[in-house]
Length: 367
Image 1 (cartoon, rainbow, N blue to C red):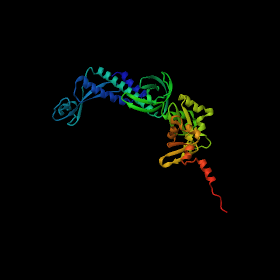
Image 2: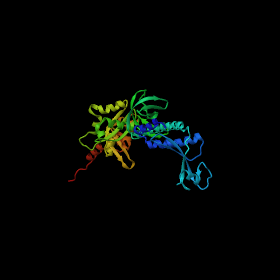
Image 3: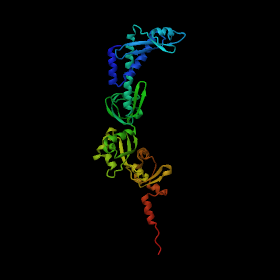
């Protein structure tokens, strides 16, 4: 074995993190297969690779038995003791059977094994790096696209952006820099496969973590996200610190923080509302920008009936029901929106009106 290969094993151990012992074991196993394949031998052999001088020996292993039936696998005590007097029945004798031209085959085989192991190690390193980035955001460069996927270069590997993970209002061109959300990292026989998204709600959450220091530091928390990618989204935020306005922190000075996210998402509208454990308050906030007169809560069915002014009904429901749909996703409550007029016809009075009615009907005190 050449000294260059020995040096290569040391370099691989230091640069690629591949254990030299693991490489040697793999080379020895491959050489056993190469020996049997090229020399049509049925012996039980092992290969000894000397790391000091690079020499290779093929050793046939034979069992010492009283009666020899297969001389390729067995040896008599008499023959064994000619090699070393200490051998007895039950021992294993090793005899060198290295072919004269085995060096060339060994070098070629070792090179193949090293190349394969290096490739596997590099794949393993990339997998370990990216599996820790699942549910995280990265910046990539659009490389190419076909009828099904857009391929995004993340530096060490190409990620897959499928059609249903692409923003409907975006056009992707080669060399475009885009932020993507890593949804899944899979280990395959061809190496790691990375799946990314531009539509996942997690992308919106990570963008706010990047733009809003209060969220990154943990003083403001994103409680929930509802998103219809490329069109409109809602997020609910909360803080236990009464000195911080969670919505204002996300909006930023003159709207700079939220505008940066809107620009990244190519104009996607974003509503930021304050989270509350009180369903009345939370559902009312979630239906922003519409005004809410009352929220009737049915905890058993996780449902609410929301009363809004007549002129606010279309705003509360939103175009194609989008505002109500996003509010329901954001809060986790079913939301049935009714105008004030319809609510009164059904005997549902907005909270403020009901309180006024109770005052008006309060009986006079008897003398």
